[in-house]
Every structure is written in structure tokens, then in C-alpha cells.
Amino acid sequence: MPMGKGNTRGVSYSDFRVYPASFSVRLRDMDASSCQLDFEGKTAIVTGSTRGIGRAIADLLWDCGASVIYTGTKRFSEVAAGERKDYWQLDASDESSVEAFQNRMMDLSSLDILVNNAGINRVDSVEGLEDGDWATVLDVNLTAPMKLMRAATKVMKNARAGGRILNVSSLFGVIGRPNRHCYTATKSALSGVTRSAGLELAREGILVNAIAPGFILTDMTKSMLSVERRKSLEEIVPIGRMGNELEIARFSAFMVSELNTYLVGQTIAADGGITVSPGFS
Image (cartoon, rainbow, N blue to C red; front, top):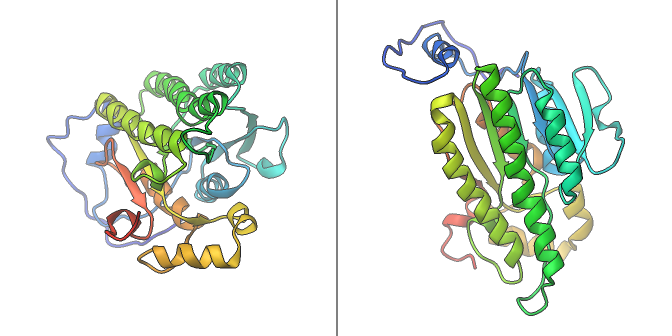
């Protein structure tokens, strides 16, 4: 997906000590005026990609040339119908499903991109939150992403070509909100894992980052929100509106592309300014 073109002018990176060597070569040969998203020849896994933000990310990567593995909890899905698309079942709340998915990942000859998007939420008070709900949210939002990162890292290291891992956190992983204890805990922890893994894997040419979407208007939120509730949320956002799936997909596509060569261990809040607004609580 072209984002802009200009005159060819090489950049010299004589002191780029990034491993593996193939990654350094790509940096040295980078065109200073190039600003083009191109995933031709890349393989990407996007979890939770049958709808919403995950679907938007997966579709955009595919539009830009990647071979994309979509995932969902059902055995079959029509979202991956088409060339360079595949669908793998993954129930992140089921340990055996996650293990089977990891084993399948290990059979890949190469993997360039992992987007950990699948997640769930439970809204309840401190007193009302059940142990089972806490455990399930922890499994889906934190444990499964960590296990998939582990498998992806092994495949990426074996291929010796670097890679990108993007964890989808949340606005509520950056700030607090009443009655979202387990969700906030897991999304905050996911950002912590991102920082640690980013530092560990940067020298391998594997860049690990996270994105924290704010209030995003998906098909699901459209059906859940009343007109009044949607208006009240829009009044909270400094930019004056809720975001949309494609906006998050575009940020994400940059973060997992070869245009991103220097972002390591960061959680980027794409939230219309909420996290920097002193009036939000």
C-alpha cells in the first residue's frame, strides 16, 4: 500500500550493529525517501481476527501483500477465503488449544509478524469478581500471548531474518477505571512483557511493541452502545469522536513493517488523546 514516493537516495548505516546480519543489510540499503508499506513475501499471524480490530489488521496486512493466518475460536471461518489467507482455530482460554496452535506455529519455515490481538473483558466489582473469571481473563489476555510470543521467537530466530511482534493492549492498560480489575491488570502486564521482551530480542532484529487502542467503534460496540452512551464517550475524547478499526490497523501496520526500525518495547496509546487528558477518570 503506497504511502508516498520520492527520489532514490541511499542512507549509510556503517555502524548499525543489529543482528542477524540480514536485518542490518536491509537497514543499510534503506531508501531515505521511501515511505511505502510493503508486506510482499511476509507471513503474519493475527489472533482474534474474525472481526473488529483484529480483522482490520489482518485484512490490511493482506491488502499490502502479506500471507496472513487468521484465527478464531470456531473450527471454520470464511474470513480467510482467498489467496494468501489461511485460518487456524485458537481458543486462548483452552490450554490444549493454545498448545496445539504453538505446535503448528513451530512447523512454519518462517514467520515475520505476530499480532497478539485476541482478548476478553469482565466487568465486575472487587467483591463480585469470581475466581474463574479472573483466571480466564488472565489466560486469554496474558498467558496465551506470552506462549505465542515464545513460539514466534523460536521460528524467527531459526529463520535468522528478524521479525515483528505486536501486542494489542488497551487504554485501560495505561490508566485505571472502576470495575475493570482483571482486564486492566492483564493489559498492564502485557505492556510489561512487551518492555522486557523488547529489550531481550532487539539485538536479534525482533522488534516487540504494543498498541493501546482507546474507544474504538467496532461492529460489536455499535450494537452495544446506546446513542446516549456513545455521545458521552465522544465527549470524553479530546479529539471529539471515537476511533475506528482502520485507524488502529494503520498504526499497527506501521509498527510491524520494515518502516519501523527503531521502536523497541513501547506501548503506543492510539486513543484520541485520552491518556494525556487531565480531565479523564
